[in-house]
Image (cartoon, rainbow, N blue to C red; front, side):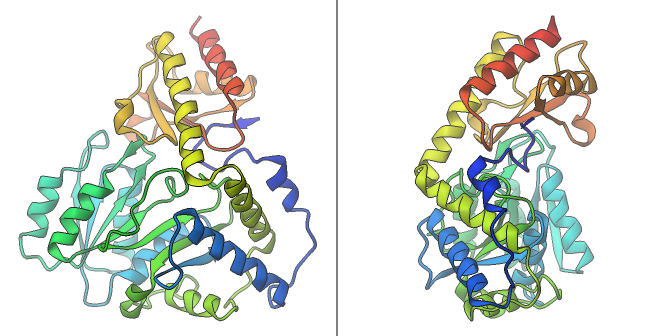
Amino acid sequence: MLLLNPGPVTLTERVRNSLLQADLCHRESEFFDLQDEARSRLLGVYGLDGSQWQAVLMTGSGTSALESMIAAMVPENGKLLILENGVYGERITQIATQYRIAHESVKHDWMQAIDLARVTARLDAGEGFTHVAVIHHETTTGRLNDLNALGAVCRARGVKLLVDGVSSFGAEAIDFSDTSLDAVAATANKCLHGVPGVSFVMVRRSALDAAASRTYYLDLRRLATLQDARSTPFTPAVHVFYALVEALREFEDEGGLVARHERYAALAEQVRSGFAALGVEGALPADECSVVLRAYRLPVGVDYASLHDALKARGFVIYAGQGGLSAALFRISTMGAIVGGDVVRLVEGVGGVLK
């Protein structure tokens, strides 16, 4: 079964077999060697300087990294402006609300790009914002939000940027030299092709000095401090760490960030052009989308459940639209161990449903 959902991904045999390694106590030096390699290789994905940035690992899904980042990086006297144009932007608002972090949200229709004029006006209104949070790749629609333009707005106002990179890290460009960027939350089981169960925050070391301590298990500064000292506060998912390290080794062997982006771009275009020939339209223009995932309009007379079940019978798992878009869209991701021949079979399968 090939997974075309936005994570977890179809694994390579190399990564799957890494789970069969020896059992390992998380208090032994061998585990800390594994943890150190994972952290070092994560820095290497974007060529980051370890004296300025660190990768902070935690056992949990990508949402755990996002929650850890939001709970820590907005200080007690800070205020967060959240940019919403999909489900995952709304999730940040829910996290900020639950932690009683001072915040406001700039809400957009889910099909809209971030309106920088509205964001700028809100920041300039004198409301005391210290941080802005945004989803990089909003998988609700497949839209890739413009981090570069948003970073320029933040830099000009001395506001720090927090990024949900869960569905973009390892495949889309992120400018870590942007001085407004303080942290990016991400996960192992999407563009890096690891296993669900471990996520991480790429955080600027200097930004941790003002970090808050609102949570216990996900306390970012404590995790960062102990991992720097070759320690860990709790029992991590050891075998999932094995898989992350193997996935990162494979990522490097395959050419790293540039090669992964190009691979996804080629597969995404193959899906788009194949569907277009069948009359299946993209929900957004391709140049506004990530190469990781794209949303498509359900053909007239075809409901999602029928399309899903027919494709699953052919060996593919696709994904529904979310919320109010569930009756209008379906989504296709091309992460993981997928090749061009798989896309040919996918398009043939959709064609068969339409007939």
